[in-house]
Length: 137
View 1 (cartoon, rainbow, N blue to C red):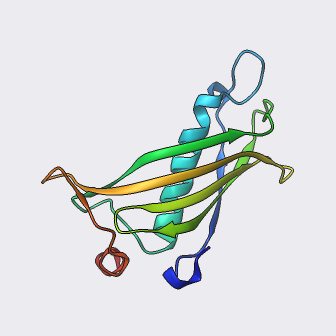
View 2 (view 1 turned 90 degrees about the vertical axis):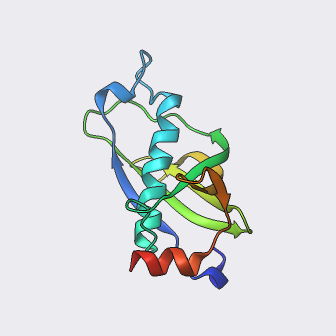
């Protein structure tokens, strides 16, 4: 985490659903982006960034996702999603995210680039953490 931004790394548990697994009883690769999205929402809210009532929309403009280890079917399984800031630039927030199984082994690693867009004006918006956090307080 880049301490100069004052944003903390956040960890959250995400329950898995039976239909998240494929025929081979492994967590389907298509589920991982959804898990990462859940982690990003928890990260944002824990860092006092709440966009649920704003005209701003955070969008994933780039996602690099490495699948490292399968997660096998378990009817009551949860995974841990860790999310932290790698860098912030004028129009992007760069995050590192990891998905860990119940044994704390890293199953997937992601590098995510987020951009902010004004949904009313349909234009990209410069990242202003002070304003985002002030509007959420």
